[in-house]
Each structure stands twice: as C-alpha cells, then as structure tokens.
Length: 297
Image (tube, rainbow, N blue to C red):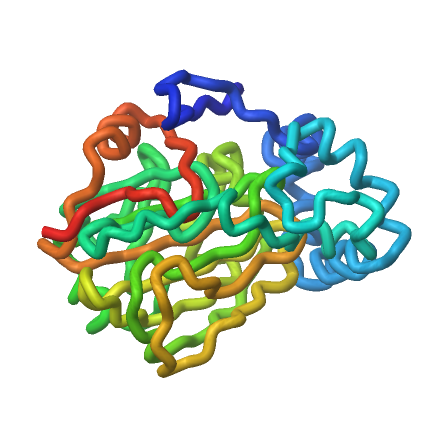
C-alpha cells in the first residue's frame, strides 16, 4: 500500500518515501511481526535501547545514507556540515536557519506548529474523533479529562504527522501563554498510516504530553505531542506561565516518527479550504512550520 500526500506548494499528489518500509509492513501485516510488536517493540525499553544507540557516536555512520535516502535538504540546517553532528540524534534534532521557516506574522493567521503531513477536521464530535476512516477515539480518553474534552465539542482538530525525514522541533501556533501541562505514559506504536489503520485508538495508547495553551487570537488550544516507535523522549523547552511569541520553539522529538495534535474550540478558527478538501478526500497535506493553516473567525 502506497502512502499518498498532497504537496501543498504545487498541489501535486506524491508518494511518501517511508524509512524502513518493508520492515514496517512486516511488523503490522504478519502474525510474527505483530507478536514481536506487542511483546517487544511497543514497550518503553525497546525505544530506550534504540535511543541510547542513536545518542552514541557510532550512530553517525547512518547519517549519509539516511540523508540521501530521504532527500533531506541540508542547506536549510543551521549546521550544514554532517561531520559537525556528534550522533544521529544530534542531527535528528537539528535546528534550521531562521529564513528556512518564515513565520506568517499576521495575527489573524494560525500557523502550523511543525513540519509534517496534516489532516484537519472541523465540527468534531469529541466522542468520535477521527483517527483514520473507519476508526475513531474519544478526546476524553486521549487527554484523561472529561470536562475539558467536552468543552471542545464542535471545534477543530489538526493532526500533523512528522516523517523521520522532517524537521523534528515543534513550535507555538500563535503568541500566548502555556498555562498547564501533563504527561501520560503509554506504548510506542508507529504513527505511520499503516499502523493507524491497524491499531484502534492508537493515539490514546501511545505516550503523550498535553499542554493547555492560552493563545492571543484563537482562545484556549490543546497542544498534544504523541510519541511513537523509537521516540523514547519528548523534550519540552518552553517555560510554563511565560509569554511566548508566535513560532517560538515549544520542544522537540528525538529519533523516530511522531505526531502533534491541536484542538481548538468552536468558532475560533476557520481552517484553510485546501486542507479541508484534501482531508475529506483522505489525503494528508505537506505543510511546513510557520505557514498559515487557518484564520481567526
């Protein structure tokens, strides 16, 4: 099964290059693979072991092939020289040149918090938030707070899936103040579309971190970072209760694919029509951190 997405800049329908594609399919499509997944790969110790290797200098030997296989543009990186990275993870959490991700400054524009492939849903039913067609989950189960979940009824959900090739730092979609946060421990399933079609309520099973962000222009926003296979660490770099600027860094994911999810309350934002159209047709849209994805109502 090929994974298609829309390249927003051109409108072209493209096929995603998936790192470890054959291994991923074996894991989720075969009996033996699923057994290893449930007994080993989804466990914290497995991602922790992979993480330790990715932090070691020995992991640097993978950099050249990884960059070439996934066509990563090193001219965007603050440090363009591969030899300047101490480990694979040091490269994976690389910072970019400021001009590589310009921020849409208009206060009426909501920006993408990360690079990735986006699905958007408006007028959501918090008891049946779409994971993929045919599978859903409840917002209460995702965040562990029924009253808070119910306050987002009829609002919007924005899911940004980060491919291993993507820039892996995430940012604030507007200026404002992050006021509360909590961590929910969980498993480490892949967030690849193949896995999302196989594991019900996957986001509710994986490790995740939840921040209530009081934005300047879009009201209260739930910002959720979801870990995945080999993402043993989600690092938050912001300070609670301190004013942040639009596009300011919130944190980063260490090695692996991962996902950010935002929930915004009803009548606060109008999502861009191309994102809605593509999502309705079942296609993710490739977006970049800092570009507009909606406007204030």
